[in-house]
Length: 214
Image 1 (cartoon, helix red, strand yellow):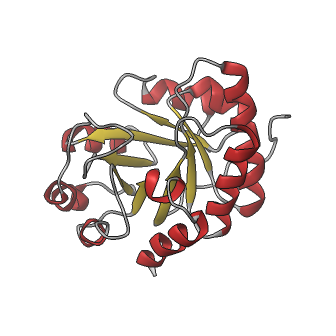
Image 2: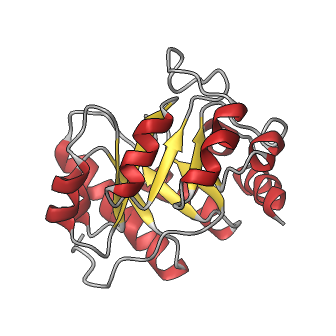
């Protein structure tokens, strides 16, 4: 699939940030993401840790094609070169990934660069000063995706909110039931894997989460 030549989409201010699960690929992945997008998610992250670069490139480009016409940014997890190759709207960087400045230099100023900050307020402030478009804290709750992840608290989110001007994302075991205290603490977006893509009805689950931001 050819790389998109359109300008990257801007990062949303608030909403649901859908993150794709491991093991969902090809047409099934594209259909699941299309369902989530059509039901109101604000952004999508393509996350696939497999060692099949050709498949990952096909899937990332396919998701750009799903999301771009609907004006929903598609972010690639961890892989700056894949984001560039697929014409994605940005990249999400973890602690062991490419440095923020290097990612920005490779992808340009118009793309979104997000940074995982775990439970580290200082890392979030430094990332925001360094040009990150959003910072992410978590895991806030036990997570099927990362069972051993560092845990963050709503108190941390509330404490860092006044000093971080970019949007703050919460991730980790978030559901429609446990998300409201995060929003009350100043979280701008909730990143969701299983509460969307593990639901029996993706559209219904997505609408319920999106409704929290109404």
